[in-house]
Amino acid sequence: MNEDIKTAFIAKIKKLPLRWLIFGCIVAVIVIIGFIIGGGNEEQYTLAKVEKGNIVQTVEVSGELESYEEAQLAFESSGTVSRVFVQAGDNVSEGQVLAILESSEILADLSAYQQALFLAQANLEQFTAGATEQDIAASYASLQSAQADLVSKQELAVLNVDAAQTALEYAQDDYDNTIVENDEDILESYEDLRTILFSCVIDIRSALSSADEILGIENTIYNDAFEDVLSATDPQALTSAVYNFEHAAEARDLAEDLVYALSEDSSQDDIDNASDAVYDAILDTSTTLLYTRRVLDATTSDTPDLSLADVSAFKTTVDAERDTIQSELSAFVAQRQIIASLAISIDDAEEYAQNILDTKQQAYDQAISNASSSVAIAQAAVDVRQAEYDVLISDKRSVDLAPYYAQIGQAQAQMSSAEARLRKTEIRSPFDGIVTNIDISIGEPVGIGQTVVGVQSSSENYKVLVDVPESDIVKLALEDEAIITFDAYGDDVEISGYVGRINPGEDDIEGVVYYRVEIYLSDGYDLTLKSGMSSDIIITTNTKDDVLFVQQRGVYEYDDGTKYVKVPVGDSFEERVIETGMRADGGRVEIISGLEEGDEIITAINN
Image (cartoon, rainbow, N blue to C red; front, top):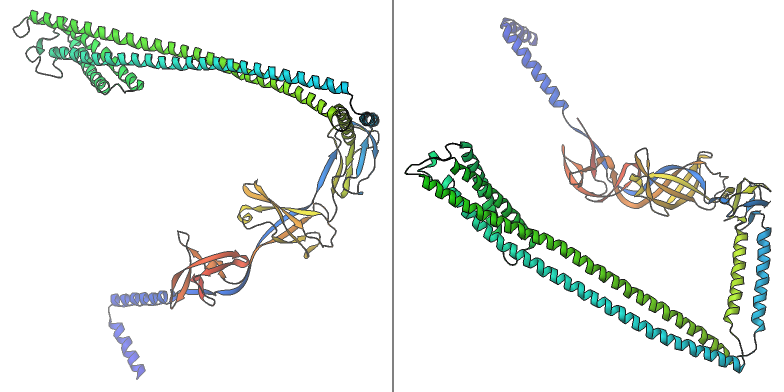
């Protein structure tokens, strides 16, 4: 039955037109492709669980072993080597003498100073008897004389200082009066200038109005009847007059704005600004009147609208305005010259008064200094005489011990100086350690500062210097524990250490910022170490126990810095905001909030 159906179906297909067969094949292919694409587009998630446990944060670096202490020693004086007490490789203790220079002269000086000290002490012991009445009387008289001299010096000092102070006060008054008078003069001069400025702007406006009656620029109806005959023989004069009138009008308006804004309280700068504007306006107005006069000179009309008599009257008016403007300019310039000269005079007067004041101040300061010095010397003499007298009248019979103590102190100082010179001929070990090199021999001359002996700390005192990149330096803190391995012993041999020092200054190594850190070796290791050995260090910077953590690759970040994870929900996922803590080794990151133990997050999405 099925075979018959199949045969009938094929027969029907063969009867269909070719285009329908092609169309059907295309539809079938599209359906198959869509089915394949749709079925293969299902997303697959890689999941990771939120775990709870212990996490560790470390920093791994490499470095070289160095002695904890190392010194290259030199003599502090020049000379000839007398003795060398050690060889390279010898163990030495702190303060041990390693080598000395020839020092016979210094030893001789030291012996002489010792004898001087013994003599000074003997002299002090010799003077144990009490003073006589004659000695006491003489000392008392000397004390009274010193006291009288002190009183005299104090009185003279007061007189000298008072006189200098009075002279200084007079100089200060003269200076203050000079300043006040100068201020008054300059204020008065500027007030006169302000008055002249008001007069100038009035005459400037009057002069330009007179010119405008001829030119008809601001008031165009003034010359409607005769503007066609103006400057008939010199048209350029009319063009120049119009051009300069427009500039003069702008300068006039600016000057009026600045001048009419002035008052008795206006500053000198405001008056100077207005003065500059008025000056420009005066010059522009004078030029405008000049060209207006030329316009009239080039006007030959004798008509009822502009007769020769009218032209003559205009000329008379223009000439009068030019005289007025010239007078204003002269007054204006003269007043500004007065102010300029006054300013120079004021500067000279103030400089002179200041010089006098400075001289009197110096004299006053010198008087105080001289008075203090004089009184201090006199007071010192009184103190010495008082001390001498007090010694004489003390219950114990004694003499002035001060000179003898001074002799003893001098001898002791000389001895100390000789001992210091002698120490400069010696080289001593600054710490317990091993001699690394001896670069001198007996009889050899050496200079000051010439390095001759090297010492480094004992073999058990080592440190490792490492360079930590800036991305890791913020994790480190002093006393952080470290595990150290040496290339010479392999990775299986570990010793403990700790962060002993972090250099706050940075080093730039091939464009990368590093910080120098010193790792100190803990006590108790049983290895033979040598300076320069290469080592690898793992520094434990932080540990946390019993905390939640996830893989770092499953944590994402929004543009504002907020952290989130993708949590599967059915066939899709949702984004959940979290708060993270420490980033630990193994790609782990601490979860503070937002997730619970056992929760699953998406670490990768595969199509």
